[in-house]
Length: 373
Ligand SMILES: C[S@@+](CC[C@H](N)C(=O)[O-])C[C@H]1O[C@@H](n2cnc3c(N)ncnc32)[C@H](O)[C@@H]1O
Image (cartoon, rainbow, N blue to C red; front, side, top):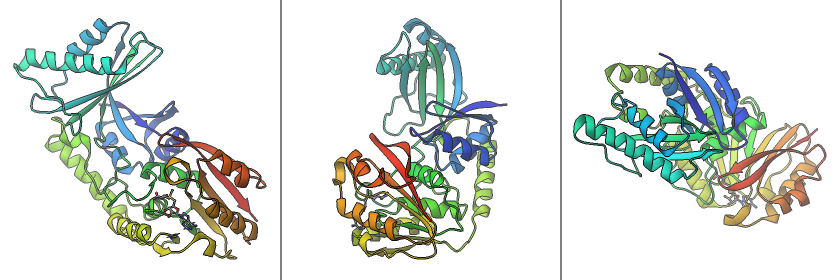
C-alpha cells in the first residue's frame, strides 16, 4: 500500500530538503510551500524519520475531503475509521492551520476535529481517547486550504531537530535541522576543512560530522509512529531492520572539522554534545580574533551573535572581516546573520557576496556566502 507523505521544512530550506530526500532515494519527491511531498509504503515514512537531517516533521496523509463548512468538517472526520492507529487507550492532540478558507479559526478547527474523533469512538466502543497536549500517543494535524481539508498523522512525535544528543541548551543554539540545512546550502563536502570559530553548543560542527560519518540523525531517539496501535510485530521488525542498516552505514572516517568559541562553558557543552552524538571534533576555547589565515583553504561556517537574545557583536564581525581580507587560498565563508545593520556594514559590501533567506525560529536571517581566491 502506498501513502502520501509530507516532510515539513523551515522557510527557505524546502529546496535543500527536496535535494536531500531525492539523494536518499525517496520517490515522487516534490517541493512545495512549507515542505516536500513524497510517496511510498509506511516504511518510507520510518526511513524519512530516521534519515532526514533537514525535515522538521514527517507527516502521513490520512484523508482529504471538501470542507466548505463546520458541519462538513465534523461529519467527514466522524465517518473516518481510525481504529488501526488510535484506540480509546491512546491519547491524542490535534493542531490545525488554514489558508483562504471559510473555516479560518485554527483552534476551532482543531477542537471540531477532536470532537468528531472522540464522538465516533464513544459510539463504537463506549469510551474515548483523552487529550494530552504535551506528550500524546498520536499527533494529528489538520490543514484546510481553499476549503479542502487534509488530515495528517505526525509520524515524528517530538520534532525531528531533537536528535537525542543535546545535553543542555547553551546561549542561543541553532536547531539541528536548520544547522543541517545550512551545512548543505554551504556546499561543504567532508573532504574539505570545516571551521566554526563561534560554535556555541557545537550544532553546526556536530551536524557536519554526522553527515561526514553517514550517521543517521534519528539513531538516538524514538518516534511517534512507535506509539500507534498499528505498530505491530511486523512493523517493529521493519523498523528494527532500518535501524540495523543505519548502524551498519556509519563510517569511521577522519574528520576535518574544528570548532571554537570564546566561552569555555560553551566549549564544555559542545564537547558533551559531540560525545553524546558519537562524533569526534577538535574543540578549543579561543577568541575568533586569534584565528590566523591559513594557506590551505576550506570552509568557515558560523553563526555569530546577533538579534534579540545575545545583542549584536561588532568585535566578532570585525574579526571575520579581517580573516576574509587576509585569507590566502580558496576559502568559502558562510555566515548566518539576523542583523540588517551588520549585513550593511560588513557583509553586503564584500565582492561577490550573495545570500539565501532563512528563518531561525522567528528571526529572519540571511546565510551569506563570500568566497576568496
Ligand atoms: C549565536 S551563538 C552560536 C550558537 C551555535 N551556532 C549553536 O548552535 O549553539 C554565538 C556564539 O559566539 C560566541 N562568540 C561571541 N563573540 C565571540 C568571539 N569574539 N570569539 C569567539 N566566539 C565568540 C559566543 O560565545 C556564542 O557561543
